Amino acid sequence: MSDDLHDAELSAAIARVEHNPTDLQYRFLLGECLFRRGRHAEAIPELQRVQMNPKTRAAAMKRLAESFTILGDQKKAEDILRQLDSERFDDEDDSGSAPSPSPLKPIDPTTSPAMNSFPEDETKNG
Image (cartoon, rainbow, N blue to C red; front, side, top):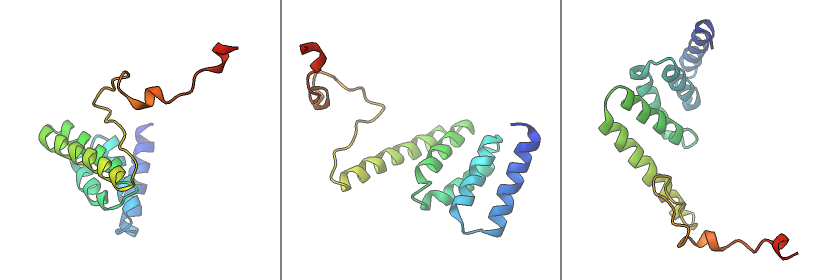
């Protein structure tokens, strides 16, 4: 994107938030726009506000962690990602379904029940 388009996008995002200060989706878009422009310190408060919105919470938390990492606060970034990971598993536990494996932990195919749940390939028998 050219600088002019980025500037227009940022101006539009700011205008939307000014006209709708309680709209968390607009605040998320502003935070996202600031993040993409490399204005991480300005993006952080917007992204922190939108964590209340379940639709944007996970994406906002990921951007917050990235922003804190870029700004050199690795501890805050790790705390946010840890919280996000625990919430993801808490939500799955509440739904009654088994939590999916964390992307950070490798799956052992010899012990994973999913690896043994597929029917035999019928083309091999034919």
